[in-house]
Length: 476
Image (tube, rainbow, N blue to C red; front, side, top):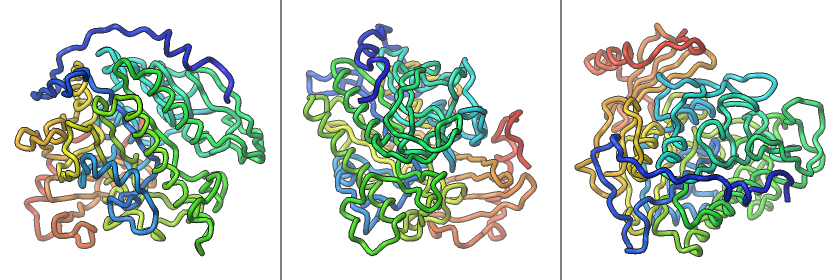
């Protein structure tokens, strides 16, 4: 058991008591949570995998890696076919999720590191999903990986609306699954792993592997749920698998054992990749069973997604398991494989079981969606649209995006736009627009820009207004 401030004591002492506010973020009411005994404010659990591909789950077409519990979650809820991450890498995707903006408006638009530990921090006055929900009377917790502010900065989770935090502040630190320490709130908590090297962030390669950080975080999440079952809570479970340990070369798919894949005639990294995903699947089963055992299953909505597309790091090969499915591209691409991600939502008695939606949505929709679910006051300037009508089977009441927008700043600037059936990608601020018809060509194999000049003209006009200038993120 890790040492440090008692998590249970902290949670008991964190006072709330702020009355729920009327939302202005969506002209739609959730109404009663049903079942008579249920509260009107549902618990909200948002589980986000790290570098999990669109094709890595059985319910999205995976044939080899076993994911029975997540597949069952899809059978018991709603599966989104056209949901998008905030970005194609970690920090900006998480910023989009937390703030309700696309990457033309977010403060964090890339993995910009701040030494000695952490990434570019969110400013102190940022309105985040947990801040909004805490104002509506929710207990809020982040368990897992943050990446939006290092120790002592304005961007730490406890400074950005979370009552409780356990995990990694720094994304680079999170590369190591056997670290010397994690954070509980603002305090370092020592683990029993011994780590080689003297890096200030502790992200060396462990030589004595005792405490697998992912397992510790899952245990914390289950305890948080149990401790807070009597009141509305928001749990952001930002798990770290199947991301690679980037400091471990081609042995970076670290997992305690290969499980059912141990005897497969596969490269070690591919065994590790599959074992990570099945371990995640096992623990999603634990989480959903916990909700049933506590009697809060019908008053808890659970979202499951990934922060971006699959990776080619730590020896992983996204082609081995067809991790991006029918999509082109992987992590760091703005083609569909880099940004289109699984999204499953489950809420027994409210979301119809076994449903699928092609509603086009993105991470910046989560803030207004949570606002309506919680009866919270949503920011007026979000880029997002509330998805509650879709979730509750009222598609005729669902507002739709005219455009979705992304920009990315590694290896030169890139921009992407989705407009209905059309997807546009541009490399460099002065680059020529590529255009793809996703209805006819989901794999983005054929650039049809020359055949549809009217469409490209409309998208180019939108691109001229899609972003705000940033001191850190300039298009090149």
